[in-house]
Structure formats: structure tokens, C-alpha cells
Image (cartoon, rainbow, N blue to C red; front, side, top):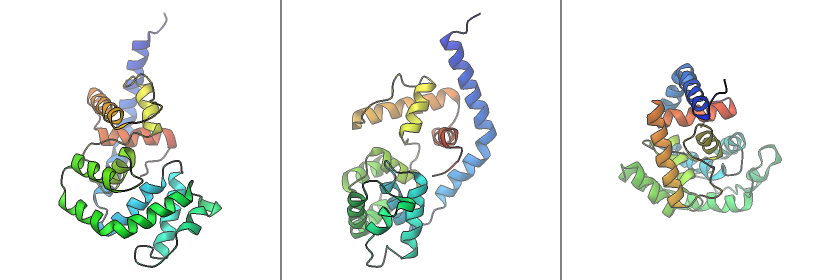
Length: 216
């Protein structure tokens, strides 16, 4: 007897919940790690999130490590040679270099906002409005990496593909306006409630399914 689409989807969701049970310990530990990131690292976490669009997380990680080695936060360093190094190339390195230098200049204001605001929604709106290069995805990514996202979601291509796979959305959006981002985010949160997996854990579970790693 042919399996219906609905039955197939229920089977896939059951498998997803089983996989979550297997990886739950590692996922929760990773979330605890995010919450323990010291404020002294917020600057570099922000740089990381500014570099990840259309660039691998591994390359962004390596560049952040190089920038830490030369104390980019406090020294007069041109980051462009690091970003364009072929061993960890950052796409659109000229534009991203400008954004890194601008964030370095403006980080005292950013740090003050992070210290003053409690609401993740309020923080994200402020970051999107005031930090050049941060859209809703990147701002949420940054807040998640410092343990401050409070259930907001990172809607990158890995997440969107899985939301479509499990029936939370019909199609993967070709572009993301604010309205569309918030609409898909609500669907993601609703789906997490349906399968009984907290949205922050589901985010990392989807990432681990795509990449084989539970990384930031």
C-alpha cells in the first residue's frame, strides 16, 4: 500500500524527534557554552557573524582567530589581508573589511546597547538598525552566539530547507524582507512546539543534520 504524503511526513517528524533525543545532550551543552561567552568576546563574535554571509563558518572562525592573534580590537590593524587570504577566504572581503572597521569604531556604543537592553526582540531590532551588515539572520546569529537570542531563530538556507522538508513552510523564500522573515520565524516556532523540541535546540539539530557538526 502506497504511503501518503501525510504519513511520510509524520514518519520523518518521528525520526527527527528520535534524532533530537540522541543529540540532545551535546546540543544543550553547546547552548550552555553560548550563555557562558564572556562580554570580552562579544566584539569577536560580532565580527564572526558579519563575515559568515556567503562564507563558510570554518573560514570565518579562522579569520577571527587570526584577528585575535594581532589584537584587532585594540591595535591599528588592517584586516583586509587576513580576509582575502586564500587559506580562509572571506567573500566580498573589501566590503566586509569596511564593516569590520566600522564596527570596531562603533563597538563602545554597541556594547552599551547590549548591556542596557534585556529583550531579545528589542536587541535584534536595534542591531539591524544600527550595525551595518547585520540583517535579521546575522543579528539573531550574533545574539544566539552570546546566549541572548531568547528563542529568536536564525533563518539561513540550512534551516529553511529543513523547514520545507518537514512541512513547516511550503517553499524556501527567494528573498527575505522583514515581514517574510518574521512570518517564517513564527512558523518555525510553531513547528518546534508541534514536535516538542525547543526552537534553540531544533536550530542546532538542523545544523548538525546538514553539516555533521554542532557548531556556532
